[in-house]
Amino acid sequence: MASIVPADRSNGYEAVAGDFMSRRTRSDVGVATVREWAKELPPGGAVLDLGCGHGVPISQCLADQGLIVYGIDASPSMIAAFRARLPDAPSECSPVEDSQFFSGRRFDGVVAWGLIFLLAPAVQAAVIHKVAVGLKRGGRFVFTAPQQPCEWPDNLTLRKSVSLGAEAYRQILKAAGLILLDEAEDEGENHYYLARKPDTHSQMSESAAAPEHAHAHASHLRNATLVQRDSRAFPFRPPDPILQPC
View (tube, helix red, strand yellow):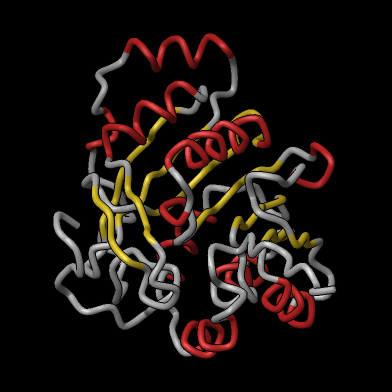
């Protein structure tokens, strides 16, 4: 009897885990921006890294800041490497959309660097709503995705990546009860969405009444130095997009 091959829940990354880890280990893309973002978190706060990979460089950066890091990734090979690098960090091998986020724990911060656009559109929205539930009051959320709506093949897996675009992400964040504080773009054209869970219900109501594009104020993150476009896999992506309109 032919054996049943388990479905790949890692969006193709388990098959390319070795290549991904080799490339990502040689790149510190995202570190400067995440380090600045982490300064807004309480000392020793709990941070969830969604799509943590093998922990380099984002989870390692957070741990180096004295934060308690939790990691979730659907690639068994990458979670094994994560656990070897950060043995004290709780971790889970699971697609983020299926995870219980460590049995309902609440986090001071959640980061999803190079992950959201790997997911199907409906799953992207569901994960953002789940993040909102998983944050403490006043907790912070940062994720990357291109500003414009577009599709392109992932550099390693060649699977379709999808950006819903800034306007859609703003609406999803608002519907999830999160305040979009700012958007930032580094010199490598990575686009960041910086959000916060309100401290009180009244604060959320006040935010909803504020100008929709209040996030446009200058951010201290805008000048972060990175060297790639939005992509989880490939820190040397060419400057021109593979597939228009991205």
